[in-house]
Amino acid sequence: MRYALVTGGSRGIGKAVSKKLSEDGMYVVINYCSNKEEAEKTLEEIKVAGGKGELLQFDVSKPEDIETVLEKFSENHPENHIEVLVNNAGIRKDNLQVFMGDDEWNDVISTNLNSFFYITRRLLKDMLVNKFGRIINMVSLSGLKGMPGQTNYSASKAGVIGATKALAQEIASKKVTVNAVAPGFIKTDMTAELNEKELKRIIPMRRFGKAEEVADLVSFLASEKSSYITGEVISINGGIY
Ligand code: NAP
Image (cartoon, rainbow, N blue to C red; front, side, top):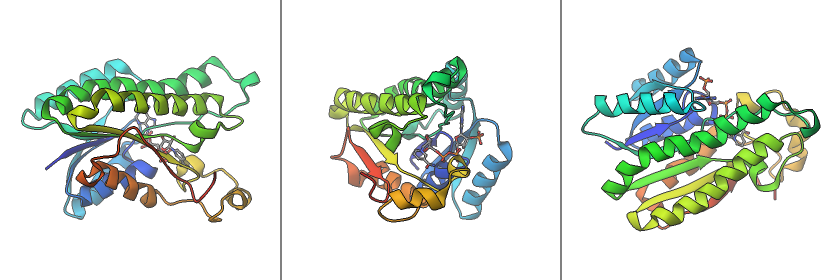
């Protein structure tokens, strides 16, 4: 069984990705931060469907936690390593830049951008040695076009997009691919307080996307079928340009 780690794999898009990768036959390591109940529910759903996996609690914004937890994970699984990494955990703390506090900036950058660096660096060596790997980064339309009220979030996602393109070129010859998925508006807790009725008007498909639709794209990128795609940002947004 291939091992996949989905950060923020307990709720929303990450949950749908965890379930889909399990359906694809992978052992899914579901990371979460604080909501243990939802994480346990996701793992239970996977097990009921006949899949295998485990929970791995750590705060992706804390480099020391990442190192300690992933080191312990390797010790517990000496025969296996993570071949598919989905850097999905993310937060938003919207504010106009003129009013934005240091914490609002730093929390979003460390959760959405720095986590990509620390987690990927930690897991990359095994992928390179074994000459196979899939790294999929969850970015956003915000990181492509910039959204007012989201200078922190847009910067974090644009940062991951740049890193995706650079890292893809560094490791392409080792058959490790790095791609980004850029959703538009997807129905999850993160978008729960948005005015869907109003926002639907700017989406050509006139609806928010489903987490499962994003998961299907991640599933393809995680598979052998995507072997000649790297350094790409694939939008999934109902036609917003
Ligand atoms: P969500 O419903 O709010 O779920 C967030 C997930 O990330 C939860 O599993 C949460 O775990 C985890 N998480 C948050 N902070 C964490 C941390 N510091 N360490 C570890 N895990 C953490 O979000 P979503 O809508 O599914 O978004 C998933 C990703 O897609 C994010 O990167 C987001 O920026 C991106 N995205 C979403 C949309 C959208 O419309 N929904 C659009 C574009 C991009 P806990 O429950 O334990 O906190």
